[in-house]
Length: 113
Length: 112
Image (cartoon, rainbow over the protein chains, first blue to last red):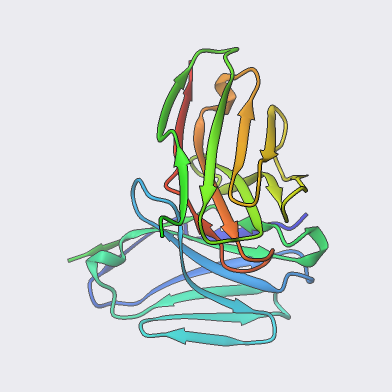
Protein backbone atom coordinates (compact mmCIF):
# COMPACT_ATOMS: atom_id res chain seq x y z
CA UNK A 1 0.00 0.00 0.00
CA UNK A 2 0.85 3.69 0.08
CA UNK A 3 3.44 5.01 2.54
CA UNK A 4 3.22 8.65 3.63
CA UNK A 5 6.04 10.25 5.61
CA UNK A 6 5.63 13.62 7.33
CA UNK A 7 8.21 16.02 8.76
CA UNK A 8 8.82 17.60 11.17
CA UNK A 9 6.97 15.89 14.01
CA UNK A 10 7.01 19.11 16.07
CA UNK A 11 7.34 22.71 14.98
CA UNK A 12 7.44 25.93 17.00
CA UNK A 13 7.23 29.34 15.35
CA UNK A 14 6.80 32.91 16.53
CA UNK A 15 3.47 34.53 15.83
CA UNK A 16 3.57 36.15 12.41
CA UNK A 17 6.24 33.82 11.03
CA UNK A 18 5.61 31.15 8.41
CA UNK A 19 5.35 27.42 9.00
CA UNK A 20 6.10 24.68 6.47
CA UNK A 21 5.24 21.00 6.84
CA UNK A 22 6.44 18.45 4.29
CA UNK A 23 5.15 15.04 3.23
CA UNK A 24 6.38 12.41 0.82
CA UNK A 25 4.40 9.54 -0.66
CA UNK A 26 5.41 6.31 -2.34
CA UNK A 27 2.60 5.37 -4.75
CA UNK A 28 2.83 7.31 -8.02
CA UNK A 29 -0.86 6.53 -8.63
CA UNK A 30 -1.95 8.67 -5.65
CA UNK A 31 -4.07 11.51 -6.94
CA UNK A 32 -5.67 13.29 -3.97
CA UNK A 33 -3.75 14.98 -1.15
CA UNK A 34 -5.71 16.53 1.72
CA UNK A 35 -4.39 18.30 4.80
CA UNK A 36 -6.22 18.01 8.12
CA UNK A 37 -6.00 20.10 11.30
CA UNK A 38 -6.77 18.43 14.60
CA UNK A 39 -7.35 20.46 17.74
CA UNK A 40 -7.11 18.89 21.16
CA UNK A 41 -9.96 16.50 21.87
CA UNK A 42 -11.53 16.90 18.45
CA UNK A 43 -11.63 15.03 15.18
CA UNK A 44 -9.50 16.12 12.21
CA UNK A 45 -10.92 18.83 9.94
CA UNK A 46 -9.97 19.43 6.33
CA UNK A 47 -8.16 22.72 5.80
CA UNK A 48 -7.01 22.40 2.20
CA UNK A 49 -6.60 19.73 -0.46
CA UNK A 50 -5.00 19.34 -3.86
CA UNK A 51 -5.42 16.93 -6.74
CA UNK A 52 -2.64 15.54 -8.87
CA UNK A 53 -3.49 17.68 -11.90
CA UNK A 54 -2.66 20.89 -9.97
CA UNK A 55 0.74 22.09 -8.71
CA UNK A 56 -0.33 24.67 -6.14
CA UNK A 57 -3.45 25.81 -4.34
CA UNK A 58 -4.01 28.74 -1.97
CA UNK A 59 -6.71 29.66 0.49
CA UNK A 60 -5.97 32.91 2.33
CA UNK A 61 -2.97 32.21 4.63
CA UNK A 62 -2.74 28.54 3.70
CA UNK A 63 -1.19 27.04 0.58
CA UNK A 64 -0.30 23.56 -0.58
CA UNK A 65 2.26 22.66 -3.25
CA UNK A 66 2.60 19.32 -5.02
CA UNK A 67 5.61 17.94 -6.88
CA UNK A 68 4.44 14.75 -8.61
CA UNK A 69 7.86 13.93 -10.01
CA UNK A 70 9.50 13.97 -6.60
CA UNK A 71 6.37 12.59 -4.92
CA UNK A 72 6.19 15.24 -2.24
CA UNK A 73 3.73 17.88 -1.14
CA UNK A 74 3.93 20.66 1.42
CA UNK A 75 1.68 22.80 3.57
CA UNK A 76 2.58 26.48 3.97
CA UNK A 77 0.97 28.67 6.62
CA UNK A 78 1.87 32.36 6.48
CA UNK A 79 1.38 35.02 9.16
CA UNK A 80 0.80 32.37 11.79
CA UNK A 81 -1.55 33.08 14.69
CA UNK A 82 -1.92 31.34 18.09
CA UNK A 83 -5.13 29.69 16.90
CA UNK A 84 -3.08 27.87 14.24
CA UNK A 85 -1.58 25.79 17.07
CA UNK A 86 -2.77 22.20 16.49
CA UNK A 87 -1.68 18.88 15.02
CA UNK A 88 -1.62 18.78 11.22
CA UNK A 89 -1.88 15.61 9.15
CA UNK A 90 -1.19 15.09 5.49
CA UNK A 91 -2.78 12.22 3.58
CA UNK A 92 -2.75 10.61 0.16
CA UNK A 93 -5.28 8.45 -1.61
CA UNK A 94 -5.24 6.37 -4.76
CA UNK A 95 -7.80 4.50 -6.80
CA UNK A 96 -5.50 1.46 -6.70
CA UNK A 97 -6.47 0.81 -3.10
CA UNK A 98 -10.11 1.82 -3.22
CA UNK A 99 -9.33 5.48 -2.58
CA UNK A 100 -8.37 4.76 1.01
CA UNK A 101 -6.63 7.62 2.82
CA UNK A 102 -3.10 6.97 4.04
CA UNK A 103 -2.11 9.50 6.70
CA UNK A 104 1.23 10.89 7.77
CA UNK A 105 2.19 10.69 11.43
CA UNK A 106 1.30 14.30 12.18
CA UNK A 107 3.06 17.58 13.01
CA UNK A 108 2.37 19.35 16.29
CA UNK A 109 2.53 23.07 15.51
CA UNK A 110 2.92 25.60 18.33
CA UNK A 111 2.63 29.31 17.55
CA UNK A 112 4.27 31.37 20.28
CA UNK A 113 2.55 34.73 20.93
CA UNK B 1 -26.76 19.13 10.69
CA UNK B 2 -24.81 17.17 13.29
CA UNK B 3 -22.33 15.78 10.75
CA UNK B 4 -20.71 12.58 12.03
CA UNK B 5 -21.77 11.44 15.50
CA UNK B 6 -19.91 8.79 17.48
CA UNK B 7 -20.99 7.09 20.68
CA UNK B 8 -19.72 6.61 23.29
CA UNK B 9 -17.09 9.34 23.76
CA UNK B 10 -15.19 7.40 26.43
CA UNK B 11 -15.12 3.73 27.39
CA UNK B 12 -13.08 1.52 29.69
CA UNK B 13 -13.16 -2.22 29.03
CA UNK B 14 -11.60 -5.19 30.72
CA UNK B 15 -9.53 -7.57 28.62
CA UNK B 16 -11.84 -10.05 26.89
CA UNK B 17 -14.97 -7.90 27.05
CA UNK B 18 -16.81 -6.97 23.89
CA UNK B 19 -18.33 -3.70 22.76
CA UNK B 20 -19.67 -1.90 19.73
CA UNK B 21 -18.75 1.64 18.73
CA UNK B 22 -21.56 3.43 16.95
CA UNK B 23 -21.27 5.97 14.14
CA UNK B 24 -23.97 7.83 12.28
CA UNK B 25 -23.78 10.56 9.62
CA UNK B 26 -26.56 12.84 8.41
CA UNK B 27 -24.88 14.15 5.24
CA UNK B 28 -26.19 11.41 2.92
CA UNK B 29 -22.61 10.26 2.32
CA UNK B 30 -21.96 7.01 0.51
CA UNK B 31 -18.64 5.99 2.08
CA UNK B 32 -17.79 5.50 5.75
CA UNK B 33 -14.54 4.65 7.54
CA UNK B 34 -13.18 3.60 10.91
CA UNK B 35 -9.70 4.73 11.96
CA UNK B 36 -7.63 4.33 15.06
CA UNK B 37 -5.22 7.00 16.24
CA UNK B 38 -2.20 6.11 18.32
CA UNK B 39 0.57 8.46 19.49
CA UNK B 40 3.24 8.91 16.83
CA UNK B 41 1.40 6.74 14.31
CA UNK B 42 -1.15 9.04 12.77
CA UNK B 43 -4.50 7.61 11.71
CA UNK B 44 -4.68 4.05 10.48
CA UNK B 45 -7.64 2.63 8.61
CA UNK B 46 -9.35 -0.35 10.25
CA UNK B 47 -12.30 -0.97 7.92
CA UNK B 48 -14.24 1.02 5.38
CA UNK B 49 -17.50 0.83 3.51
CA UNK B 50 -17.36 2.37 0.04
CA UNK B 51 -21.13 2.16 -0.29
CA UNK B 52 -24.12 0.73 1.52
CA UNK B 53 -23.92 -3.06 1.53
CA UNK B 54 -20.13 -3.31 1.12
CA UNK B 55 -17.27 -3.43 3.63
CA UNK B 56 -13.54 -3.89 3.14
CA UNK B 57 -10.48 -4.32 5.33
CA UNK B 58 -8.05 -1.47 5.82
CA UNK B 59 -4.50 -1.50 7.17
CA UNK B 60 -5.23 -2.88 10.65
CA UNK B 61 -8.44 -5.00 10.64
CA UNK B 62 -7.40 -7.79 13.02
CA UNK B 63 -9.55 -7.99 16.13
CA UNK B 64 -12.38 -5.91 14.68
CA UNK B 65 -15.60 -6.41 12.76
CA UNK B 66 -17.89 -3.88 11.15
CA UNK B 67 -21.48 -3.58 10.04
CA UNK B 68 -22.89 -1.07 7.58
CA UNK B 69 -26.36 -1.10 9.03
CA UNK B 70 -27.80 1.33 6.47
CA UNK B 71 -26.55 4.37 4.57
CA UNK B 72 -26.33 6.45 7.76
CA UNK B 73 -24.79 4.02 10.23
CA UNK B 74 -21.49 2.13 10.39
CA UNK B 75 -20.58 0.28 13.57
CA UNK B 76 -17.28 -1.17 14.77
CA UNK B 77 -17.24 -4.20 17.04
CA UNK B 78 -14.50 -5.50 19.29
CA UNK B 79 -15.38 -9.12 20.08
CA UNK B 80 -12.68 -9.73 22.70
CA UNK B 81 -10.88 -6.54 23.67
CA UNK B 82 -7.12 -6.57 24.19
CA UNK B 83 -4.86 -3.90 25.76
CA UNK B 84 -3.34 -3.34 22.28
CA UNK B 85 -6.72 -1.97 21.21
CA UNK B 86 -6.40 0.95 23.62
CA UNK B 87 -6.65 3.90 21.26
CA UNK B 88 -8.77 6.79 20.04
CA UNK B 89 -11.21 5.66 17.37
CA UNK B 90 -12.54 7.97 14.69
CA UNK B 91 -15.37 7.43 12.29
CA UNK B 92 -15.39 9.39 9.03
CA UNK B 93 -17.57 9.71 5.96
CA UNK B 94 -17.18 10.97 2.38
CA UNK B 95 -19.61 11.55 -0.45
CA UNK B 96 -17.43 9.34 -2.63
CA UNK B 97 -14.09 7.60 -2.01
CA UNK B 98 -11.20 10.01 -2.54
CA UNK B 99 -13.07 13.18 -1.56
CA UNK B 100 -13.14 15.29 1.61
CA UNK B 101 -13.57 13.20 4.73
CA UNK B 102 -15.66 14.46 7.65
CA UNK B 103 -14.67 13.07 11.03
CA UNK B 104 -16.56 12.46 14.23
CA UNK B 105 -15.30 13.64 17.62
CA UNK B 106 -13.71 10.31 18.46
CA UNK B 107 -14.11 7.55 21.06
CA UNK B 108 -11.33 7.18 23.61
CA UNK B 109 -11.13 3.47 24.48
CA UNK B 110 -9.00 2.04 27.26
CA UNK B 111 -8.64 -1.72 27.68
CA UNK B 112 -7.24 -2.78 31.05
